[in-house]
Each structure stands twice: as structure tokens, then as C-alpha cells.
Image (cartoon, rainbow, N blue to C red):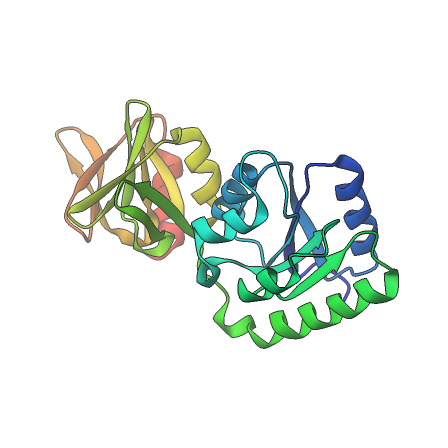
Amino acid sequence: MSRAEWGVVVADDEPAARRGVRQLLAGFPAFAVVAECRTGAEVLDSLDRLAPDAVFLDIQMPGIGGFEVIGRRTPERMPAVVFLTAWDQFALRAFEAQALDYLVKPVAEARFAATMARLTRQLASAAPARREPSIVVSSARGSTVLPLSEIDWIESADNYARLWIGPRSYLVRESMDALEERVRGHGFARAHRSALVRLDGVRQLAWRGGGLSAVLAAGPSIPVSRRRRAAFAAAVRARGI
């Protein structure tokens, strides 16, 4: 393949180990490293933001270890997992966590190539069921996965952002700028400083009270600021609305 087809997260608290995985992956151009993580918390954040296809995961990392990463996210919501660790005694537990493979450092190139062949086969066979981009919202009751295609709009709420799906809303502790970066490539646009709107959910653009508003199919009417009016209207029209 001439270009990267699948995204990979490399997670290890040692820079040299991460660099080693990058060097091994360089021989497989269908795979691109989309993030390097030093801690389990960084891994969880990267999984939410980037939806990678695979993660090379160390077992012992500061704070949250590899197994806890899987436990918090659940095996069903993990990408393909390859453990790459200096510890050989956790292999059984790794496969019980539905890992694709378990590599003990230092790993030989031939052994790594065999893993990559398995990983390629698995990802190729699962291509039609590729995960939909989503935002995971955590609360005292657990985690909720919100597919971006179901979120109608997002509004600023002090130090949080409120994600609206119909009449229901969910709070996430993230800035509007960070959220805009995450959703911009998935059909969202800023209506004003404190609102992001999913363009496919816009039913019409209407002039109300001397200003332009985006009327959503879900019901709400979101004002569009004067500064963003032209760009927002063009983005809506480009989607045939």
C-alpha cells in the first residue's frame, strides 16, 4: 500500500521504547502512528479523540496501567490491542482481555512482522464495520458513548461543554476550542463563539429578529453570529441544505 490506511497509538512510558516501536512500524507503510502516550490517562484521551485502529500498549505505566486502560474502556470498545512489554508473566491475562498479541521486549523483527500480518488481516476483515467517531462522556453512573452523527449541537457551559442529542444533554469537561478541533472534520461548524452545530442537522437558515439562525431538525434555533454568518451559510449550502 502506498499510503497509511490505519492509525496506531504507541503507549509506553519510556521514550526509547516508543521510538523502537516507531522504527519497527516504519516497515509497514499502511500504518501511521497518530499519537504517542506516556501514561494510561493519555491513552484513554487519545482513544476518545483519535479513534485509532490499533494500540501498542505497555502494561506498567504511571497512574493507569495497560490492563486498567482496557478495564475502564471495556474490551468491546478498544481498538486492536498488541501488548508490547518487558514482562512475560501476564500473557494469559492479556489474551483474556482479548488482546490480538503479546510481545516481550526486545522483540525480533520476524516476530513483529508476524504480529503485523495478523493485525493487517484483522483490520482488513473488519473494515466495513469501522468504528464511528464518537465522544465518550463520563459520569457517576458510568461512561456514555455519543456518536458524532447523533449530536445535534454543542454549547459552552462555563468550564464544561454541553452536548445536545434531541432534548437530552451531556456535560463534558473540555473547551470549545478543543471540541471544535475534534469535530470539525465530521460535519460541525461554529455558529457563534459558544456553539458548534452539526450541519447535517440543520433544517433551514432563517432570518429572525434581524439576525440569521440555524433551525435544527431536532427543534432548537441557534443564532449565527455576524462574523461567522457567511462561512456558516456557505458550509450549510455545500451540504445541499
